[in-house]
Length: 150
Image 1 (cartoon, helix red, strand yellow):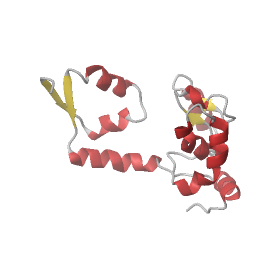
Image 2 (cartoon, helix red, strand yellow):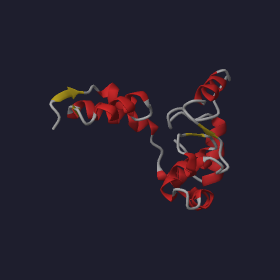
Image 3 (tube, one colour):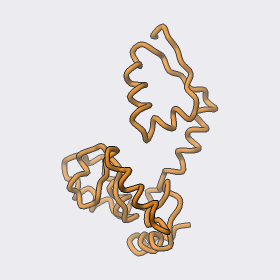
Image 4 (spheres, one colour):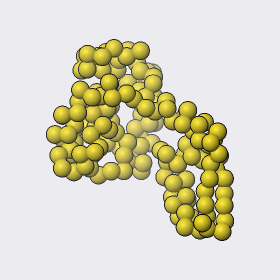
């Protein structure tokens, strides 16, 4: 174990999941510093991140199409593409395997353009953190999957 130790707060762990800056810092120092997070902070982070999760019930019907579009590039990524197909929205990724799969993709370098454009609309078309759906997106998912969203 490295000689230096640092305890992380839940918000640092949350930022490490979707972000790059915190992750880069942790990775850059992992060999020289041991990072720990108390169980309660982990539970808090998990609670916040749970709002991002969509059920396989929502996107499972798109597995075959997603696998076909990804081909041999990275077949384990099919749930990401299937979720985007089911919801009818783009993907935010740094993974080039999604480029050219027939769904709009945004990188971290360009995502501000998408987010700023969406914010300027009166009602968002895409779900916010996997939970908030507009009537239009609920209707689109219901038509595609036969599943009703709560």
